[in-house]
Length: 341
Image 1 (cartoon, one colour):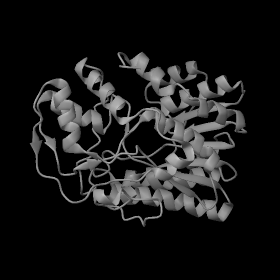
Image 2: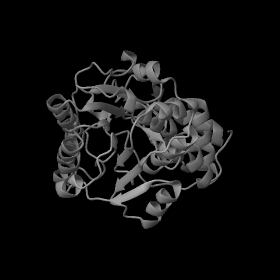
Image 3: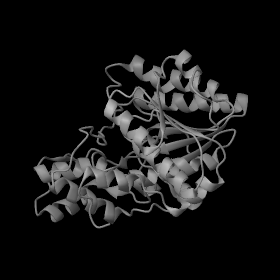
Image 4: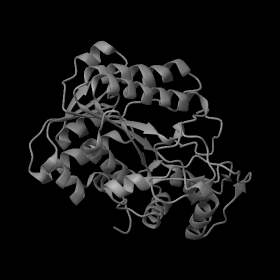
């Protein structure tokens, strides 16, 4: 696919299952419940799971759980073939009423605004996982986490690996490590098979670190070099890894970094977009010696390389920006180094 021209085409691309997704669904036993399905990645992950299941010729219950603040989104998810349940995951009684499915993908969490309401951030990122882990103790759980739990590292290290000790910067990242510790505790105490999926910067064209850089270049705004290197991955590939990660759940939990294989220079990416747009890239600040970077070689050795390479992803992003494609208006704040979001 050379370009993506519309939201309909984008949604289709994000949820089209690959051969590995379909084959996995043939092997997987049990129903799937996706918690926090109304966020940025949730709807496309639900659709991917439904489409892969159908292509595999399997019948299973697919449940999407969220507050569903937008009724049209809930309707869209139901039309895709999934059942939806309205649930406030911060209420343990509501969590306890959810159907127990063998396979759980936990996507709920809070990042933006965490500096204004740190109390709510800790509730969503720590107390909610406790209620979920307690209720789904006999399930497999893929729990979304973040590379923010790692320290900032120099690019020549190749990025933080799963064996590296966490050293989170700021309350948001600390609460994310708290989320991991809670899932770790329940996995060890109850034998719950768990995978902690540390994701760095998914891109779906309406948001993402490459989108942030491309839009600034296109608008002539300065691109910050405070964080000089980044990771990123096509959201469709991140969804695929999360889905197939159900097969990797273990007790104690397994940890898996999920991102693309490249450590991308922000300056280089901005210049690539500038050349594509026929404009000058404007920068502010200077590169420092460290960045939030993850090494995802383990993920790619186990689950295969991403289907969308960086060159293709950047071309999709550039074209989307050029045609005035929609935006979620949720910048990644990749340039932030003090952990305050």
